[in-house]
Image 1 (cartoon, rainbow, N blue to C red):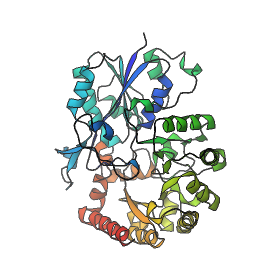
Image 2 (cartoon, rainbow, N blue to C red):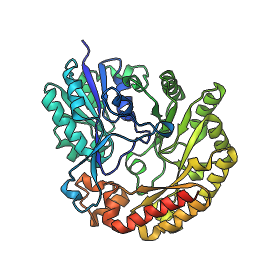
Image 3 (cartoon, rainbow, N blue to C red):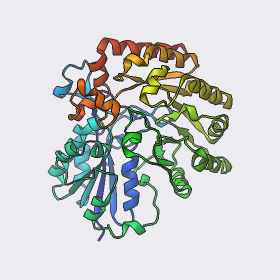
Image 4 (cartoon, rainbow, N blue to C red):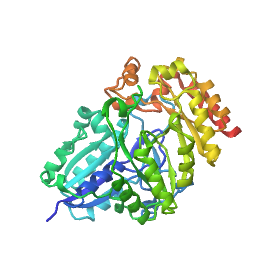
Length: 432
């Protein structure tokens, strides 16, 4: 008999959360590896369509995005001085209790994680599993488990996969000797009863070394996934009726002839009708005239461009990724190719420790003058990155709650100044 495995995407504890094409791609990818050897079920606390079955009101907005169910809860002590409501986002604990009680017992539960400061939701799930399914072995993986392995080990899981190596999981299930010979199997998107939006990756890693980002600093290496696997992933999503697909790549446009361009020609040649989105940010310096035209033809609908600052001093200090003339050029190419100005957005960091160099208000105005929207990306001080480590003078990074992207900018700049930047962002976007 095959082992039974429960996949869990936990609820979020935070000041703000939104379904911005939010899918547990890493967890589902691991499930694809395991598919030939185990029986699986998925419980995603953040799956909005499942709220219909649980009696909740479904909220679906533009391109598959939407609001998550939420309720206000008490703030942890670390946030006592933050003038914001703290909430729990996701399906209720009672829904999970009914799901587990009505299921055949699971041998293993795999809990995926994302933000380090979302760990209270992970702790909730572990506690409920111990209560309602005491015989299940709990495995914790994902970004939080890798970035804060020692802290994650204190939550009570049986196994914490604190590196990209999944051998501890395979060995625990008893398939270590079999997994290497498995045929490729796409992520387990079939775990959802209804799927409006999904995510895909054509690459792994990042070749850049931005000082505020974990991927390029700590994971290292960059490679393109085999084209056949990427196409298989796409065909799986199309077969499930998905209309909106977000790219989760950190460097989608890097060496595009090896990955993105063949992928787009497959979409164009086969007349595939789907909307693509880029929430992880495109490298504006790599947007060429050819790429812009192909992206629009292939169905790219929203374009998020990493910009961060118009200050050359700031850019040089943080990795020299994108300069102002490159943003102007990228926007020009996209508009000429037929992209809608209202669907082009420049990300800019709010609350960076080198805010004095950043000239944020001027940078926001510059992006606005390019004729596109501005989105403030609140800074999260990630331990192990140069810019994150620089924040130890303000917060205790050994407590992951202090990595919170709402909390840190307020601690650094003050609530009034943070609100003034957000109001400026609203005014600029409204003026468009």
